[in-house]
Length: 113
Length: 115
Image (cartoon, rainbow over all chains, first blue to last red; front, top):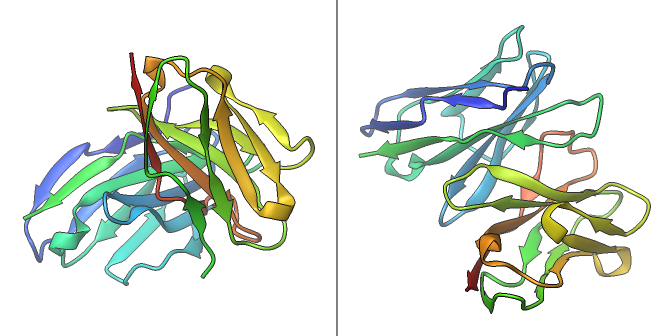
């Protein structure tokens, strides 16, 4: 089985721009979650999508948004980028009919200049 | 505030030494507990998990963890570490009613094993 695939792996943006990150979950997994990883704050939950619906949201401003498509692929968007948004953004998928265990992708490393 | 705490931020051990990494959480009710590991340059990988049943769970690569409900703890152990265990270790909790995808992570412990 292919793992969780995230694109792009690396990107550089400037303040004020927006960015869209993509995640393809493991085939058959319907839950996709997003996390932000930074040296200072560690791993923080952004949101979870299941069957195209956001069913859980972390404590991030409205500039952070996401969506899920009918094939379970997910995107997250960050608008009006700030320097503090520089981070590794991780996507994880889960087979909610089974072990409820998250499988993580390699992440998208965003640098905001 | 509800949280997950890992006691050690940076641990340095020699090969063959025993390892114990502490993890405490502050959620009441039934929680699912996990340890994830991030080897240098690699994905976060599941080391082991506890959902219910035997509080002593075994994971990959010789790791085990013990759930002590009365202490809200889920400590990770390994009797004899190897150089290849050098990595960052994260304790995580799936809080009550948190749905599958919401994990609350501890700050992580960097383990350095000296050959």
